[in-house]
Length: 111
Image (cartoon, rainbow, N blue to C red):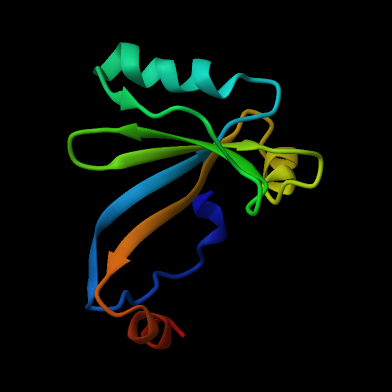
């Protein structure tokens, strides 16, 4: 994944803390079983699976002491994470979510 990054990006100064890291879970795996790994290994609290029909995924949030992990599971054949999972058969980190006090300013700075 890091091989795609040719240069470091200047990050906006108004970025806040890491909100969550999203990990795509392959359709062949059960999302609840994937979440239970965090519960067993780290004692993390896990949410119930929530179908997000408007986003084409089912999500489970894993609450860790300093952040969250969002597990993404494809919901249907046309899920937006299908392409990612075709390239990454075992799943993997899909995105990170950073908080910001001013989204419009952060987008402007990042451009």
